[in-house]
Length: 260
Image 1: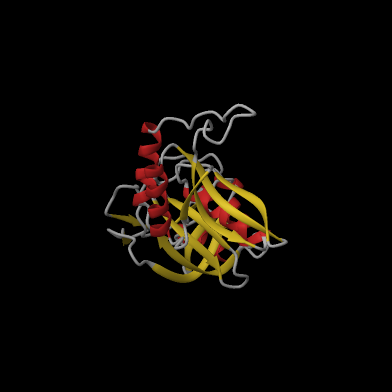
Image 2: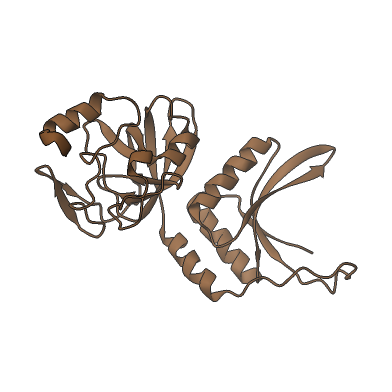
């Protein structure tokens, strides 16, 4: 710390400071390495969980932004205040969690890539972008629930994406149904309220599945609906696999559809 301030005073000042405050007392990547099973900060040892299965936690969330923008995180990545990331003391790096603001019901899916916050009564420090989505920028803190999401399928998705060829270009105008190349999609949901569709789209984009996520409007029985689809995918098998991964992610009604 600068100015010769003792560490306990820095932590105390940050605790009572204005919303969004974040100091080195809260994020110390030099001593909280991403791959360590345990680490020590200010004399206290923290043990990293071996698995995120079934992890649920409630407590106070805070956020950090411009002061740390461009600095290294515990994972070695450069902190980007506009990315959907967060710091946690015990969750593995990397892992993904859904954060629910219990005051307003707003949700954000974030990737854990940093350690902290090392301030009493706070359980997670989310990025500026995540705080904005959760509606907690003004208050600076919020009572939240954290639910861990399985990140294993997401890793497999990224590896598979490098091996799967790009979908064929769209068929020329005037091609018959038989001449068109069949494209496969996975429908994650259909909603009468477009806000629900776009919320799901944001959530799935944050999860980084290996397919574009789009919202399409369609009419049925005189009513307008909005469906969330992932794709196109190159084969029926790839679409079926993605539907299974979405089911593991918690999208129980995911189903495969094709362009024909």
